[in-house]
Amino acid sequence: MSQETSNSKTVEQHSILKSIFLHLFPGLLALTFYCLTAPIAVAYGFPSMFAFILAMICTSLPFELGYLLYQSEQINGEMSLKGLFDFKSNLCLDEYLLLVPALVIWGAVCLGFIGLVIDPIIINKLFSFLPEWFNVNDIIYNAPKYPSNALIVTLVLSFIVLGIIAPLIEELYFRGYLLPRISEYESTSPFISAILSCMYHFHTPWQLFSNLLFYWPFAHLVWKRNDLKLALYIRVILGIGLSLSLIPLIWVE
Image (spheres, one colour):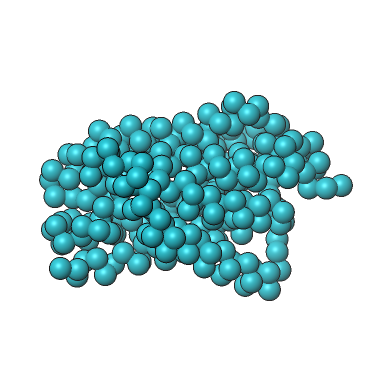
């Protein structure tokens, strides 16, 4: 029996409207919080990334984790993530050693190099009307204008939240819980998961293209290999790497 058929038969399926809502609503919560707090953070000398991290801590991540725990209580009778996820295969060590570095490198290329080259062009062409504080990556381009203490606090939070906590919770939510529940769309399911995951990032609409370049093969690989741990390893390693790459900004003058 194919994985697509097996998943659709053993896991409750969501309607496309419900799946769209569950993918995008946490991002809307974070966007609202971010728009309300980013101007204040910048006024007090913090980069807008600081406000975005607070937005995730206060809105999207609690919603995603809370929804998983609620569903677990409904399904298993206890607030535990045990038994909630469908992708349970275990790849051999050789496959992890091949696939994890390959996708981490590809993610760094898409979210790092391609993003840094293409994003400013898209921003100037399509999103120049947005205020400067809206660009969460302002810290990359304007690090010298922020106090070193504000940069250090932001980068420490970035490492903890964007590097570790957010990748874990988001992958459990998007790939672990939501993706198997649209498996009735068979081989199209990973693409739906990828595009909705990219749209979830309302705070960076200009990154839709570079994000999709990464998330589409990423979601497809997790789907085909039926291994949620693969998603967790890739996202956490990539998140930590991207967070650590920001450390030199402290000494930029």
